[in-house]
Amino acid sequence: MGQLSNDERCAQRRIVATVRSCGVLNSDGLAMWREADCGEWKATAAEIGRDLDLLGVPHTIVTAYRFPLANSWNKKMRRGEEVRIAGKDLPHLVRWMPSLKKSIDSIPEDCPGWGFMFFQPKAEGMALMGFALSADWPVWSQKQARAARLLCAECAYDLRKGDDEDRLPYNIPAPDKPNRLRLVCGRCCNQGLDQIKALAGAAGQPL
Image (cartoon, rainbow, N blue to C red; front, top):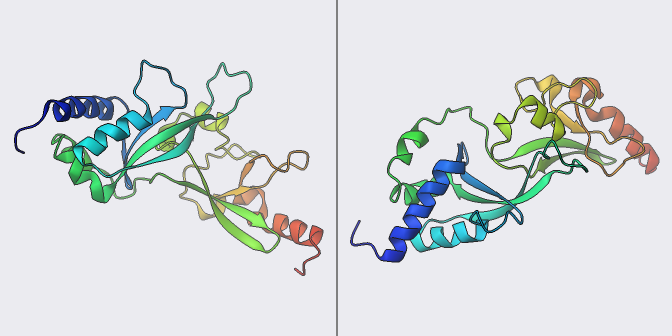
């Protein structure tokens, strides 16, 4: 690395500090989440992105949600923006943060990625959908996962496990809240087949 400009040095210090404080590594890459309207005391996703641009690190910024806070009166998921650096682009970041390479090399092969996927029964069949969560969703506590509706609404099975094909997550909304996400494990909803039949019947489609 040649002579650095003052701007590059400042950006490097900020990025290294941010990665150390909130960076999440997984099989898809590295992510840094920022709550929307987080205030002036913390760098925004856009500001992190500008530093990465200055350092030549490819990245994207996506909307991602975290579990609601315990004292939240409406229990809504917290919306934020997540700066994501794909795994193939991490060498560009390692150039500025060599100590990161050891952590990258230590990522387990079965480590989850950014996305949390679930099945969505439809009248015409089954669709695979994604829940736009922040990258640290696999390590949320049981209480946090419950608040984020990641436990089966029927039996409280932790739907993040993903190691039991009989208990994969399906969105089966409550009749009185048809537009609200309600995840249920496959064992509790007959793998979504009953929901498909009900939707197809309501739509007048042949089963």
